[in-house]
Image (tube, rainbow, N blue to C red; front, side, top):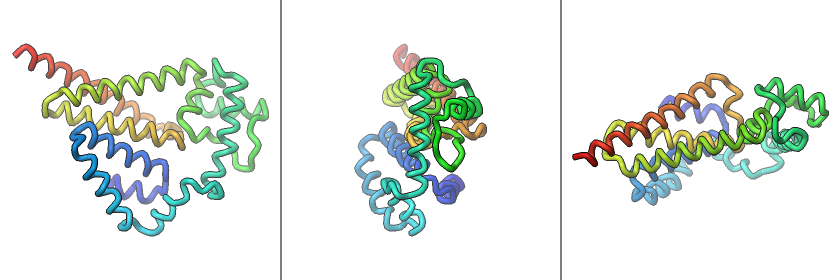
Length: 215
């Protein structure tokens, strides 16, 4: 309830899409047969949304919306940074990126450049090509292994933990397409904690699988 209230108060469309994906991923991993019921429930819930939230959702594809249009120069600056230094990046941390963009005159908008508003672009411009490939590869591999573990693991706390962590990672990775959650250290800390839980849960499920096989 607290999480739902926080999501409603933030008016962050990327977060709303992310939590929807996380919920869908959780249903898919836990019991795929419930997906049609989940989809129907989501559709039926749309009319119940407050007008303020519904109107905010409807602006996602509106390029005239200031929040949407304001991302365009940010993406352009990020892509220009990648073009300038694709392999090594600009250096770790938003401050290093901001200084690099300022020194090379890559950003041209009134609002200051804080970050790329995209986790993949931001990781690339900070850590270079190897950094973004390693990051995306680690996330995909962890989610894949967790999905396999949940599918083959019997009902247990480990299965629940793994399913929840993998679903949360799916949600944050989708949210990261339009935002940079790591701009807040507290969010980054929670992100890596959930990533660690996903790995730990996967290992626990594998151990449980091994014990069942020996029996």
